[in-house]
Every structure is written in C-alpha cells, then in structure tokens.
Length: 370
Image (cartoon, rainbow, N blue to C red; front, side, top):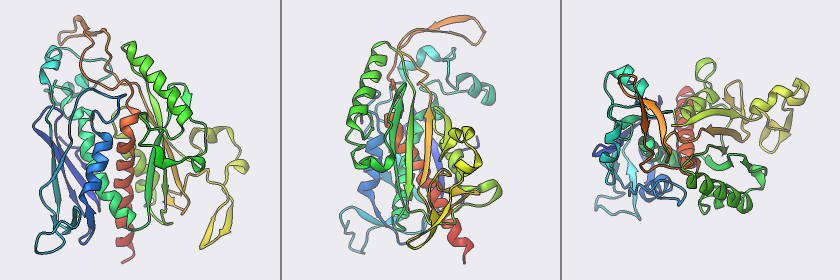
C-alpha cells in the first residue's frame, strides 16, 4: 500500500490501524540541534484525542506519545531540562498505543458496507479490508499527523512562524468576525473550538441538537499562518498552496479548501480583486490580502489565510439502508462511538498538516539558497 509517506525535505512516514496495538510514525529531515519540548508535543495530541471535548466521541484514549529514536537528553547526565530533548538529525520514531479499541462494535460490518465510508472502495482496491473502524482509513491515524506536526511547529517557531486554526462554521451557524479581531488564544477553552463566545454557544446548541437526533453535521475550519517569509513554495507543480491543498484534502471528511478570497473571487472584477503593492516597514507588502498570502504559488510575506470544509460524519446513530457483499439490501443499525461533528477535534489536525507543509518548504528554501 502506497500513500503513507508525506513531504520531501521534512518527511513523515506513518503506520498503524485504528484497532491495532498502536499507531505511529517516523519523521525524517528534522535538523539536528532543535530543542524539542516533548510536553508541547503531548499537549497537541491532548487537543485532538478522543474525549478532549464533550461534543466528541465517547472513545477514551490517552494518546500518550512514546519517542523511540532521534532525540537525546541535553547533557550526558541524562537531565531532562523540563522535558526537552535535542534532535540528533536522525529519524525520529514514535508510537501511540491504542488502549480503548472495542473491535466487537464492528462485527456487524464484516459483510456490509457503511454509507459514506471507504469500505467498498478499499475492498475493491485491495481485495481485503479491516472492518474494525475502517483500519487505516480511520481518522484515528490523524493522531500521528498531529505528533509529527507538533515537531514541525517547533521548527517553524524557531523562525518566527505560527499557525492558528479555529472553527468558523457549524451547519448554518457562521462566525462573522475578522480574524484580526479574534482572541485565538481562546480557541482551546471553547468546547467547539470557536473563539467567539456567542457564536460558540450557538454552535454547541446545534451540535447537541443534531446528536440528540442521532444525526451528524458538517462545518468549516479557518486558519491563519503568520510570520512566513517571502519565497516559500516551488513554481509549477509544488506551489505552496497546491501542497497545502493536498495536505488538507488528505484529512478525513474534507470536501473543500480555499485560500484568501477563494470562491468569492468569482464575483469580483480584476480591478477589485488585485492586491495593490505598498511600502511597509521592512520592505514591500500588499494593501489587501485577497490572495491569502500566496502569489504564483510562492509566499509573499503576508498572512496566509485558508478555510477547510468538512462534511457531516458518515456514521449515524440511526439505522441506514445499505447492501451486503452479494448486493442484497440490509439495514445497518446505528451504534458505536463517533463524533456528531468532526470540526472541533479536527482543528489541531488542520494546524498539523499546515505545519508539516511549511516546515518542508522552509527547509527546501534553505537548501535552494546554499
């Protein structure tokens, strides 16, 4: 099976299934000498883990990361320096144990296909599938992305680059506040991961209503990347927004990605949409940012802005019609432990994928200037 390797200069190789003994990964390309805050990596996993928000799944995993290679204590005596380790420049291997997998919940799916899931396509491609929660197609594997993204985040922070995401829409409840007016430090204190209290309350009420009906609902995550220098991104096939788009589309349940003005640009004239260049402290910038910080596939030094649309979770707590392997009609009973809305727990996943892409392009840019 291909498709479990991501990146070029900064690369993640992931492994493991939802109901296997563990999931994990290997990060290659992280420069030697980075003082890695292991506790901060764990904190990112805690943001995504099952049970991290009352609006999510009832599955309870500690998602404790165990580093196996690539790190060393700051001194020869083995001092932890408050949990910090120094990267060796060698592959960083880690595992996250699965402790609350209830495979028996999926026995009724051995010979049937869940609507909206990858059961049928996976089986047609490989001839066999892991019916226990979807195996590797489960969103459980995104914990590996978050761990690797947390390493990338610290590499980016050393260059003054930050990545912040938040829930900006659930169903028809929309956060209509400019990101510059939001306190993005308040995202994690909200159960729905929305930094505006009034909007968060309405989003929460909608999710609770949908859950009580045994149904699910979609949403949107918005993000801003600050401190990116001009010049990241490769022309033609490896444009920065193209690589970000691929990374974000690789997240389970993502159905749309837009940068800057996105689809709203359709209704504008070129004279309205162009970002005029102006002199700014430290160089040249743009008066507006409809391009979302990327022009010609290369960062221009402005904030990078994007939105990610998520579909409703496919597993419902109500019966659904389907078919078995012989094509005979069946009724799938709605049961299991699943999120009624995926976006609250997807916020750190979106940030992680952005961090992985930006770390990769940051290192590629450094190599191009040697």
